[in-house]
Amino acid sequence: MYEDTKRELQDLGNGLYAWVQGDGSWGWSNSGLITGDDDRVLMVDTLFTGRLTADMLEAYRRAVPAAETIDVLVNTHSNGDHTYGNHLVKGARIIGSTACLEEMEERPATVVQEVVAHPEKFGAYGRFFTETMGSRFDFSDIGHLPPDETFDGTRTLEIGGRRIELTELGPAHTRGDIVIHVPDARTVYTGDLVFHGGHPIIWAGPIGNWIAACDHILGLDVDIVVPGHGAVCGKPEVQALRDYLTHVETETTKAHEAGLTWEEAAYEVGYDAFDSWLDRERIVANVANVYRTLSGGRVDPTKDEIMAQMLRYRHGAECPHDGPCGCQAH
Image 1: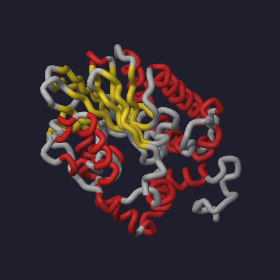
Image 2 (image 1 turned 180 degrees about the horizontal axis):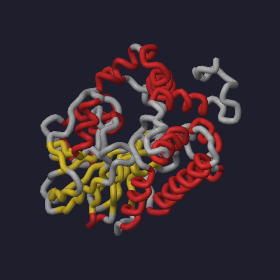
Image 3 (image 1 turned 135 degrees about the vertical axis):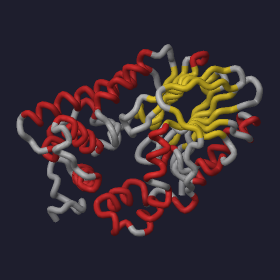
């Protein structure tokens, strides 16, 4: 069922690789492989399903025979499209932030399997998940294997004589986002702190932390940025993401001061310059997050409420009730 989506291994040079999937839309995430000089390897993230992860591992092993054994797996954050294949590298050291582990334990893979099997039990979330991901991926082979080593702040690893720096920059996309910096290769793997070609989505926030995370990445001495979703890129794309986030923060603040509800604001804050980016319905979640911060938590929409609005946005932002979007107006 995945044959229609381009999935490819990219040789970044200096013993580094990226596995890039499709256009980077919902569920189509990236991974990475970092090699040392003693046949030790570190992998950045697994993928959304067992089959997708197995295909990726096979490609890694063809390119790097030492990848037959993954010594270290680093999860950039807790989302399933970066962790549900962890069980296929059982035996590796699995490292993540403390918050990543906590989020994975709060929402194990079995929850998604239940959503797929019985979406009607999960309201707007079930409808949204089915539309964007549930019908596109086979979740029968996913697993729950969280990190067994955690850290807060920063951690430095040595893989085959190569220095690898892990830095926690969340909460932003999730509560425990980290980036993996390989200084000698001038490369950083960012997880979902960078979306290239698609709107980001703030599950945790606040948005100011994500802007600061962009500043951190922009401050690194790197030429290559491997995003969590979308094509391998560089600093100009990180700057574009920062511009997007600052625009959302500024315009949402204006809408809040004007007395608009968060639902209304989501339709006011659209950014024409980013209309070509995928998954523009994510603006709803991003605006809701800024409202939560601006209101001191008094405005705190649930995930189900956010998902209902995102469905409406997907089915016609100009006229949110003009289609079978599943919102309460029908």
